[in-house]
Image (tube, rainbow, N blue to C red; front, side, top):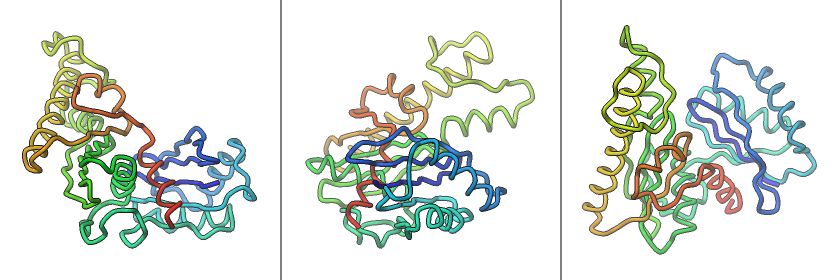
Length: 253
């Protein structure tokens, strides 16, 4: 069994891969103010509830974009499973061309690209991750990382709007019925959802223009299932791409 830990800016997502099957992931709010002992208690309880036993775990792998928590979570996993976790860095084996990996590429995006390339080697692939940040990561059919585009995530944009305006409400993001909103809620949904759909389509189109041919487009992340319904160019939707990338990298190292 492989335990995969994805430490993100909003949540820490954990899941186990057992005989090719992923259990239901659990999420813990990312809080740099929590102590290691607090996280230990939380993870101990969640692993016990999920039926994940120390003796069944062969590997633990961690991706982190929150440096303050990286070492703490690494120690906790070692304490729980008596295993030194594999830490996803640019030096681990991913199946990608290491010389093409940008020095500042986040480990989560590295996982996304590793998975995308491994399962779609016949074409260039873009992975769109609808997370705290909206990221567009592209890898060539030969395994070269072509580049990344980053924009504020959908929820990040809504929170910024809510936090910096006096009269606009906090809004749950749903698909708008029209782009001609008649109240604050419908207007914000129209602007954010339709606006971001246009942003995504433009980035895909401009990327294809630069590489000179059509690319395969995958989507993942919190709101991907919702917004993908109005983005025809998304070819594949998978909410577990980052975790699956972790599982793949664990099997390669």
